[in-house]
Image 1 (cartoon, rainbow, N blue to C red):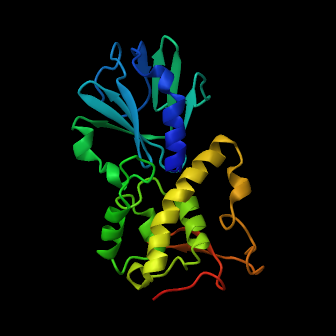
Image 2: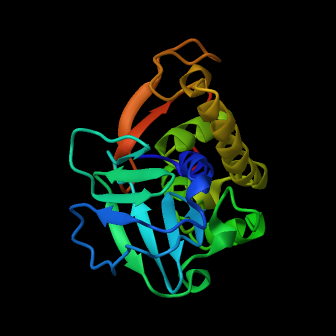
Length: 243
C-alpha cells in the first residue's frame, strides 16, 4: 500500500494536468461517477493515503488499497479502474478504490492530521493519543485519524528509531518517548519522501524486512501485530516494552 509520501510524489507528478480538460474517461470502476468528459481538473490534493482529483463541485478519491498502482502517459496490460485522457497525456489507475466526494473537502478531511500537510498539528496528535491510553504503539502510528499517511514501513522504522516495542501501551509511554513518537513520525515521512524520489528508500531501512538489529546484532523478531495484524519487525533487546 503506498504510504503518504508516495501519494505526495504522485500529486507532484500530475501537476501538468491541473487546469486541463478531460477529453475522455473510462475504466471498470463501479463508483457512481458523473460524466467526466469536458470537465476541467481544478486541483490535485492528498490527505494521508488518499489521492484527490478535484473538479468543480466534486472530487474523486483514489485509494490504492494493498496492491493499487498508477501510470502516467502509459498503460498496463490490465484494464484500468479509472482512466483520464487529456490533450497533454493520460492518467491511469489500477486495482484501486474509487469514490465520489460531493461534500466540501474541508468538512471531509482533517488536514491537521496529515503528517505531510502544512497544517499538521502535533498538539492535536498528542491529544488524540492521550485520549486512547490503551492503544498499542503499533496501532497508534497506523491510525489515520492521528497520523494520516503513516503506513507499515514508517511504523516499523519509527518505533525502532525511538526504541519502543510495538506492543507498548500509548498511555504507558514516558513523555519523552511520546514526544519522540510524534516527532519522528513526521521526520520519517519527509525522509521517506526524499529517499523515494531518489530511488534509494530500501537502502535506508533499518528494521523493515531486515534480519538483524544493527544496534545489538541479534535477530529481529517478526510478528503480525495490532488490530490489522500487520507485519512487524522489532528488537527484543533495544526496543523497550512499556505496559
